[in-house]
Length: 517
Picture 1: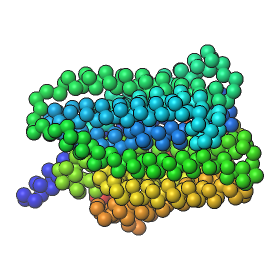
Picture 2: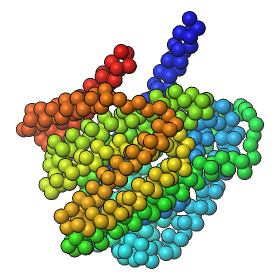
Picture 3: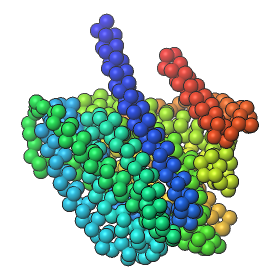
């Protein structure tokens, strides 16, 4: 009788945690879907203002910007959120706020140093790093954004640890809306006549949005800090608090820098490899703009849902592990991987069933169908593989994460260099490289996760996914045929709803039935 009572208590507690996990994930998903739609509109706006060549140049600057962000802030959000959630749930508010203030000051100095170096050396970076002098204006304009994004990362980690997702979600929406407005205003007022001027205007919009986002986040932090009263527990020294953060953030930062360096080199080498395959530099940039800036931008849009879950996963699992509740952690991992599979399969089906319609609806182009169709297997593999990195991070296995990320990046660089230079493959070689590296990462990460947590994947699970995927495929075809005379946007909405709804409904019912039997 006592054992039965304990089991009921455990189930009740788990259901409460699951409800909170899904509630927070749902809030972030709604927010990220909203910001994703705005960002998508921003990318469409960019494609029309910049053209394929300008979008290709924009795509060459972004990896460099990402690398610089890794140097200034990578690992901060994860470290602060993991530590904050423990202090917050223990009511150790003084340790929570001392951790925040100390890391905030250190981040200011680090980000300011990097931003000044970029501001001073923006022209040599454009010539020798990006290998296109037209990127110098964009690099100069984005340098202040390095400071704003880095400080915002500290505040976001603080809010994530406390479970205050609505605050960051609302501010992210504001930032994305402002970015669109600033871009339109900058182009209207400055009237740039060259590709370099338009790209610089796009990064001016990015920087302005990040400035407003940081200021708003800081105001919200000051308000939230004033609500925390009655701290408990022993107050730690600032040195110890910083050490606790660095133990988590430094491996992640090093991992991010190494991976970003390799990814940046890989991105910058693609135009040269395409030129070796027989394309001119302008045609190479146009291919990159269409494949990475348009086709993959469409097919990877649903990853917003997975990314939202991973954001909630880190503090959620940190709390479970701090309580030594490993069973709940295993259940959470299984849920995340299962949902990732459902989204990946659904996205691949939609991309394969109606690629031409998707290209026309989002970019009014008829030359993206082959690229979008080719992105279907990319989505299928990457949507399942990418969350495993987040799971390793949530489990606190930063060293393993570093090793596997390094293998992933090196393999991607080698395969991209070789395959993109083959004339018959050209830009599709980059897609093949993504697929192969994702498969390798999936195998490596699952192997490491299973050493820590039990993940049961049996034949019945595979059959459920295959049957649900087949039914979703048929549903998408039927919806597409039924709406063949409808406007493209309506047809797209119908196919997406039928495919995702059928896949999610069948899998939910099947897995629930499996648990009950």
